[in-house]
Amino acid sequence: MSRAEGVIDVEAEAPVASWVLPVLAVVLTAGMLGYLQVASLDSIEQRVLVPDAILDATIQHINLVVASTLLVIVIAVPLGILLSRRRARWLGAPVLALANAGQAIPSIGVLVLLAILVGVGFSMAVVALVIYALLPVLRNTMVGLQQVDRSLIDAGRGMGMSARQVLTTIELPLAVPVMLAGIRVALILNVGVAALATYTNAGGLGTFIESGIVFNRMPILLTGSVLTIALALIVDWLAGLAENKLRPRGL
Amino acid sequence: MSDSFGSTALRLDSASPPNDVMIKLEGLRKRYPGQSTDSVRPLDMEIRRGEFVVFVGPSGCGKTTTLRMINRLVEPTSGQIWIDGRDVTHTDPDELRRHIGYVIQQVGLIPHLTISQNVGLVPKLLGWDKKRIEPRVDELLDLVGLDPAQYRRRYPKQLSGGQQQRVGVARALAADPPVMVMDEPFGAIDPITRERLQDEFLKLQQRIRKTIVFVTHDIDEALKLGDRIAIFGESSQLAQFATPLEILSHPADDYVRSFVGTGAAIRRLGLLRVGDLEGAGGGAGAGPALRVPPETTVYAALEQMLDAGAARLAVDGEPGAERSLSLQEMLAAAARGRQVPS
Image (cartoon, rainbow over all chains, first blue to last red; front, side):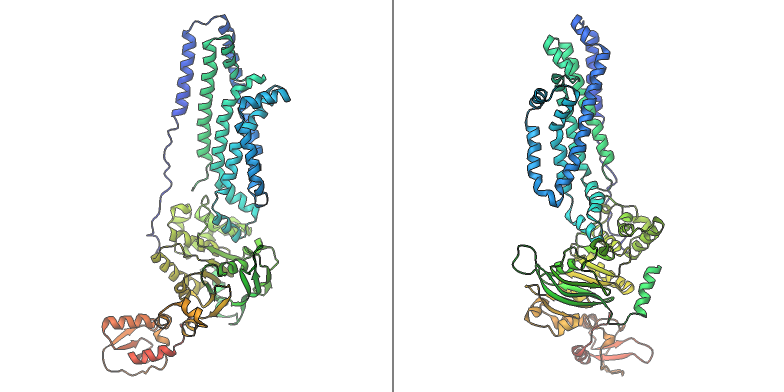
């Protein structure tokens, strides 16, 4: 009897031009490699641009990004959930202000300050990256939970769900897209900021950028910067794929 | 027809005595912290098993707060709530709510769950196993007029507003709760669909006989649906709690009279059925007669008589029991008239 009432089709999803970023990354990297083949490298350049060293630095860079982003998620997501609960809501503004400050301070400042105060190395770089990338994940977790339609929570409680069940079956899944967007921003930020980790002796692709500047060698500088850019593009692409995959259906 | 609904219907036909109280509110009062007046003044009310009670009143009159105190989404400041003879004022609210159907204006279907998962939510909370939930979901979708095969796997967004609220009703009925509370369930639905949903819901209620508390600000909806109507005054006080016919015939005070609005006498005719009119003669009279079945409302019968230019009405009945009424007899009987038994 009601079957005539219109049905809106939401199955069809707009195709994302997801191939643009990886293609750009490959083109950039290939162009750079081609340039290195053609250019006649002097002894300094040849000593620095060893394939193994480039690979090591890339892996180091990825490690920095992955470790810091995982740590950011582990800290910021539970904190964001906690701060969005009714009893702790008053704490939300001051904590957000603090996280804001973490991002407002220039990242090189955080890195150097930490290096002076605590020391250098991989873990120190990770700490600096975490401070820097905490804000987007924290803020998006809180915003994502706040924007959940109040009537859904009312319906959930009215059906007899406990506060915890409402959080896990209604609030969190609906906040996931916003939270993922925050994590994606954190990842991209970290790829960029990790290039500065070389100043605290934590390696990464920044090493080539630094050497390129110090030795005044264009091919070295180019290798570091192009690979950093390519990595950022690839990470953004992968994060976008993950976002599409993990977004709950039906939204 | 399933066991659960079958048993509900059985209970109606046989066991329960007519005055069996299902919901009892005793001195129920709410004052929000930091306010100097009560949002709901101490309220006493008894709602019978299988009764459809509508709370109606202007916004801020406390009708929704009272409704939400019944399933304790709002905790009363003082007073007691009894459901089916049990004091539930201080029991576990989550457990309580799993046994009270809840329907709201915004519907509140969980967007990332399918229709089937939405309807199965409460049974799942109650720990039913999958084999029991699945057929139950299909049965309920069928009950509210949605083809399970077609809608089971859809997401709420793929349904129209009217269809969504059908699912909302199905979800509230899923665990076969004896009591349902409904907060303006048809308030956000377009007028044509709303009327259809009201009609269907009335029919459904005649089968399932739940005890229903229903909030609306629309007096016409209240008059149409309610067995009894509670009219709340501005100061969150109960102005009148009576049957629709009683409210139209004998409004308690000027407030109720003005709330009901103009045309009370005409609107009463929509509540009377020609078959229930008293004092009508059995014989045939002069002039052409319009033939109608006995369940026709007096309102509809008069309308048809006007259309057809008929001065007499013939009411269908068993052979020999047909009755014929003149216009004057109809009006006189309607003035004395009883309410349509629902």
